[in-house]
Length: 165
View 1 (tube, helix red, strand yellow):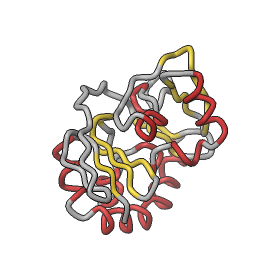
View 2: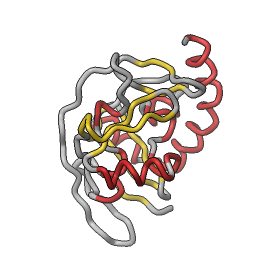
View 3: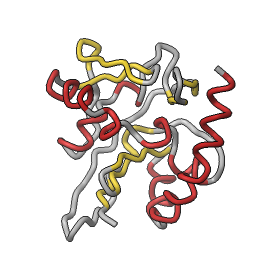
């Protein structure tokens, strides 16, 4: 399993050590998107306004700008540059966080929770976000097992969120 862990934790991906930045997150309400449950704030912005592409290209969370915005699955994603916005627009599934941007650990346990954009991981080319750095470290303890559990739980959780909309 190819892993790149963020959130200031020691990271191992083919022996590479990476340090992620610790950034404070705003409070977001948990709402469903159009056709897919997406964690977004009251203004409809996903990932607390952080650029999902930056996790892949910069290796850290970077706040996006309103001028570089793309709507996908009922949520507004913001980007640090037009280039990142265009990358996302061409392949949103490649960059959007798993489980609608809800906490991956919570989904693995059968519920949803908000996220801290600084608590992140890229595993096998997919972005996973968590509630906090402490929760992130717990999730990293068995990332593969937690992903399997979350993958099994997500369809039911997504369905419940979509019904609430």
